Length: 485
Image (cartoon, rainbow, N blue to C red; front, side, top):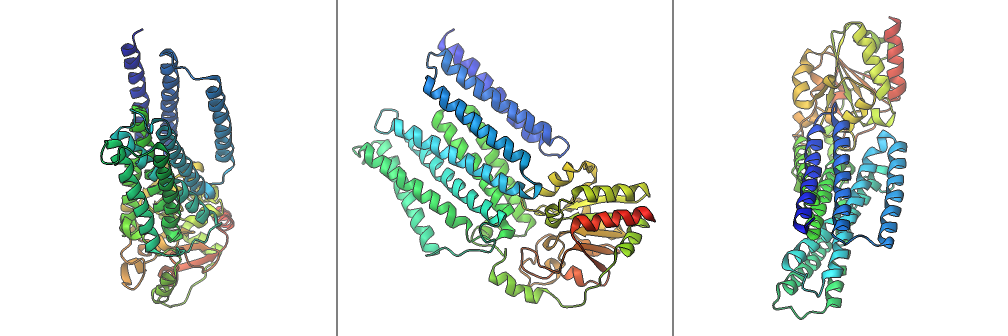
């Protein structure tokens, strides 16, 4: 078989793998088909890997024994760790796991770019395009690597969720940017041929090392000042960075399937980041320069947002009677439900209500939880029917027709201050219109504030009853009480 035919067949197989990525991403639009989408995308990746190995083997450029050992050992260790972590991780820790996966992807892309540049630097293969894609891959990959680790640490509680000021502040960021920009210009000019064509290979690698260090430090300084409330947006943005870094690696390796896969992840992650920022009524730039998640300014503003008023506590039996004899109940899940692992309990309560003829649906806010789609995944795990999961735009008009809105662990996304209090740090943020329901029951362990650090005006609304309990225990008690009626 000629080399041209061999490349044509390999290229076609790579396109098949890329098509599987596209279709898989499309299937992930719905929780009902997301599992199939993951499986299809994984199959596409398997096709791409097998095709790449077979292509070079048939060209007579097969891997050495040492290379095969490295690949197999890497697959066993990486695949084993991934399998164990995915099976053992709790749903509450899923955002941390996703963030770590982002870190691994970004780090891998950076290492590929560095490794390739080490082999082409100073040779005829060192072209202008190679230099550009290498630098972009290294910078974006390094930022993603360290930034994702910091984000994971914040979500896990190993690092404070409050904004952490970086020594030197903006000057540190400017210095890191200058190092990267100057280093990039030097490497590109040296590859272009003039005026730095005589620069030595050792110097070039030293410059690349400086860019690598600057990118890693920048990832840390970028995420540390951002508060915990903004971490879902940060994770989405870093996921986009991972895809972009992978695409740069694809250009370096001249691998179309890596370019397409990286571009898909980068584009979809960027779109999701914009949608989530819009859901918080914030610009991405505003989030990246520091959010309201737990900072002193947010806490100070919280005093003005509290609104005062008294809280009405409600018992399990009273809340159960309200829901049992309602026509329509809307459940509003939040991070508290995830922490308590109460997704099965809320599904059981819903099934009991439905058996009594009550219409039940779930209101999903775009930034509820700690990562995009957190609540959808959580409830899907408990086999909650997909049609009952309603996005904010769809469910908000229904609150005025609801007899009871049951809020389980959600805080900032239900706060009416976002509509009524210009002094509130969340003013203008789209929220779930829970206060429009005829009656509201809030299951909450205490009157503690959410990540925004402000009081929730919903809790002092006269039609709101506070059921102080752990989410899982409270839902189980409600289910038992409704069943006994």
